Structures are given as C-alpha cells and as structure tokens.
Length: 264
Length: 264
Image (cartoon, chains in turn cyan, purple):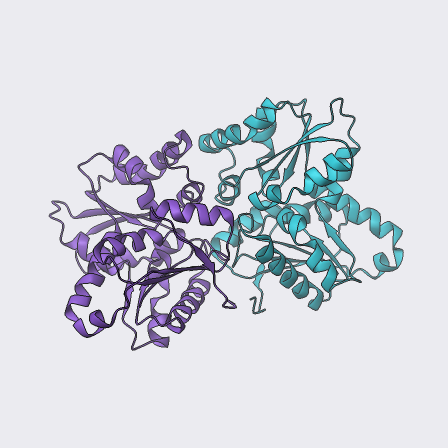
C-alpha cells in the first residue's frame, strides 16, 4: 500500500494527483488534525510529528510513504530516514525542485511561498540556489492556510490577502512560483489571476505524484505487489467540518476514520 | 501558586489582568503551542488536552487553576472536574456570563464571538438564554486567531475581516458583545471602532481575573499561602516567533520555557 501523510487534510491535494495517475491503487492517508497546523511550529516538534505519522502508516502496512506535507518535507526528513532507512520515502520538495530546474527560465529567478517553518529552513535556497544557480525569493504566507480551511477560495478578503502575499514575488519579478504548502493549490485560480500567465506555477503535488509513478515503473516488483481497491483516510481528530471539507477537496465521497493511535 | 493555561499564548491576556489585580503573586502559565489552536478541534480532543494541561500545572505545585481558554472552558470542564474534584478551578465563561447578566440591557440581546468549538457547544446559549432570559447571537470568527498571531492588529486586511465577522452582530442589533476567545481582546480597538461605543464589550479575561481575586478574599487561607515572586511561563513548543509575540502581548520581558512533559 502507498501511504501519505500531512499535518491536516491539505495533503489530499497530493492524493488527488496520485489517484489520477494511479487509478485503482489503494492508498492510506493520515492527517494529523488533532495537532494541525505544523507551519508555525519548531523543527524539533515537526520532526517528531512526522516520525509518528510515518510509524502509523508503516504499521498499517504501507511499503512506500509520501510525506505529503511541505513543512515536514523541509525539516523532518532526516529523522524519518534515520528511523526507517529501508523505507522508500518521497517528499514534496525534491520533485518540485526538479520541476523548477527543468524550466527554461531566462533569469533563473524563482519564488517560493510556504509556511514560516519551510521558509525558515532555507531548503529551497539550498537546493535551488546553491546547487542549481537559481535566485530564490522565499516568503511565508501563514494566513492562507486558515483561509483555505474555511473554504474562502474566492472571497474579497481572500483576494486581498493573496495580493498582499504575492507582492514581493511580483516586485522581484520572479519567473516561476512554487506553491510550497498543500493548501495553496486550492487558491490557484486567485493566484494565477493576480500573477498573470507569464509566471509559471509549480504545484509540488503534481510533481510528487509523477515522481512516485516514475519510481514505481523502475521498481516493478513493488508496483505489482501494490494493493488495489479502496483507500483509507485516517485523521487524529474528526469533526463535521473536517469531514465536509475533505470531501470537497478530494472531489469525491470519502469516509474519514478516527486514527486509534495514541499520538504523543 | 496560581496556574493558568491556554491552547497557546492567547491566555497571556488573562495573565495580564491577573497580574494587574494581584501584583507580586507568582503565576505558572502553560501554553500548548505544540498543538495550538484548539478552536476547530473536537470536544473529545479539547477535553483531553485540557486535562493534560491541568495535570501539568498541578504537578508544578499549583493550588488553583484558571482555564484561560474559552474553548476548553466551553467543552472541557467536566473532564477536568472529574479528574480533580478538590481543585479550585476557574473558567473564563462563568465570570463573563455573570458580567453580562449584570448589564442593564433594555432588550437583553447579547452577541458572542468565539471559536467554532465554543459556538458549537452552545454554552452561552445555555447559560445566558435558558437561565437568564437573554437572546444570544453566537458566531464563530475562526480567522481572527491566526490574524492576531501574525500581529496584524490594525492592517486593512484585519479591519476587513473584523467588519465581516461583526456584520451579524450589528444586523441583530446586539447591546453587548462577548469576546469569547483570548485572542480577540487584542483586536479591541478595531472592534470598538467598528461597533461603536453603544455596544458594551465584555472581555472574559477581566471578568475572570476579578472572579479569582474575589474568591481569594473569601479564602484567606489559600490567599496567604500564595507564593510571591517571579512567574513561570511554560510552552509545549518554543519558536522565536512565539517568544517575540508573547512578550509583546504581556507587555513585559519574559522567558518562555519549553515544558518537559510528554504530552499525548
């Protein structure tokens, strides 16, 4: 089984892409709704939460885990890799970096919009600037997460906040913008209408799903053993609001299950 | 020692009031920054968190605990009272209800602005409407919490959101508004300038601090044994951002300490 996790249900945007590319494959998703959001928390706490989510998915029988959370991908991978050295582990940053580095950009100037923890980690600066010679403009946009969770996709208040957060990217004249939080793709329309079509939008969810599919092609042994059938969606806390927006975001009827694990 | 806790550092608004009324008394504060915010979570999870925070404060030697969180006060008190039947326990709702019931209101029409969990609990409707004959208009304003945590006290975006959330209260022509989340008093200026001075603002932090002082007067035994000296401020997760805004909110220099407890 393929496992995916996120701080909440934002990672369902990655599930959606993976389901599109691998219809019929059973997925196990874990959303840590009892402790969401992660974006303003410390690297130490985020690493611990990422480790616990991985453990949960491995115990559910997942042979491959996708860290469908930009924040954990930015600061929590070393802890997970150390605890599970044999586990095929995918993050949402490496595929996005590959996607950016393949873009035919004249000035190699890229924006990264993410959580405070992701921007503070300097991960995109390290991977894109130092290794690939890009100029990276990284900015945190913490208020977009709660806006999306309220379902305020195209309210005037949303447009105003998006405008506020996009300003430094426009001023810096970036040629591409990475939406480095699983919530942001849900605001893609508002973002594109504000940025214009000349700036390429990189959605790590799509790049990550493609990377997983590519890897499976190269590992037919695991691919052929992947379970087919219905997916399971676990959350550490369950409310009516979460159930409603989860279905809306995934675009299909699902039943969230309260995870029985005792998270620390 | 007097203990206080909140989901994060919003409860420092209660600490501030208590310090004003009881200068010199040592307080112990716990903010669950590793799992903040509570407002959109389920009653079950909120109760568990409230219980763990109380346990932490009791183990630190607190003889009196103030639930400085409107959300835990709304849904978590039964669990705490059951676990600590002997502990003098204060919540932020009962004192606010008393304050409202003493107001000389012509139409007895009161607004309550709080988190989704608080509004969903119907606690104000039960205590003010059923017992005291008030008409209660309760609405959730979830986006104000992250706005305050960003320190956006008087940005145009903040004013716009405040206007949005105040609309139903203005339409219903409430005569008083309870700010039923520890974050909202930090927006008091914007709220008052929008509502006008005819609508009385009730800040549960002030009512609660006054209730604690009143109770101590009636229990001189405990009052005389209260520790004097410096207060301690514990958080379950510590970042630079939290440290910065905590000092700003409390209006004095403090050192947050990472709580060593292993919260579940």
